[in-house]
Length: 166
View 1: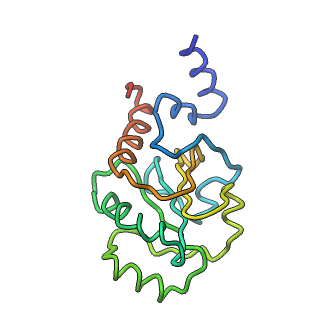
View 2: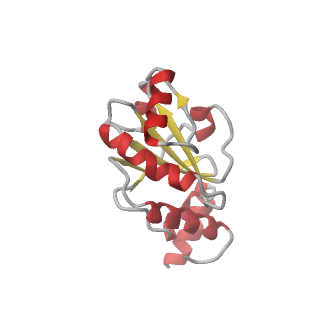
């Protein structure tokens, strides 16, 4: 019965239900948004599994998780793309923080519009959102702490697409 439910959901949701067999990292809850990822980042993602991280300089937990995300992004074989979007800080301030934290692989994109939080259904920072094939599947408000769990979840999402079980 569970298998039939998953198949029906996959048919209805265009593949988003593939995530049903994967357990999200701690703190993430299932989520949806009418806004596809490409509308938010204004380009197509480089990988089918993407973690979008929204942050600001004044947010201490945001700054704390940037090195963790950068470590994942430095791995050319990582099963996900990490996109960081800063909310409205001056580009020179972003550069300064990236230099202080030795961030080398994360994008320095600045969205500049706090309405993005509402679009994503967020209420505070940091906000991290999982997308698969341009569709939101899960989100978390609060700092990320476990890079291995993020990579394992992304790997599971990719493996499920190819028909293997996690």
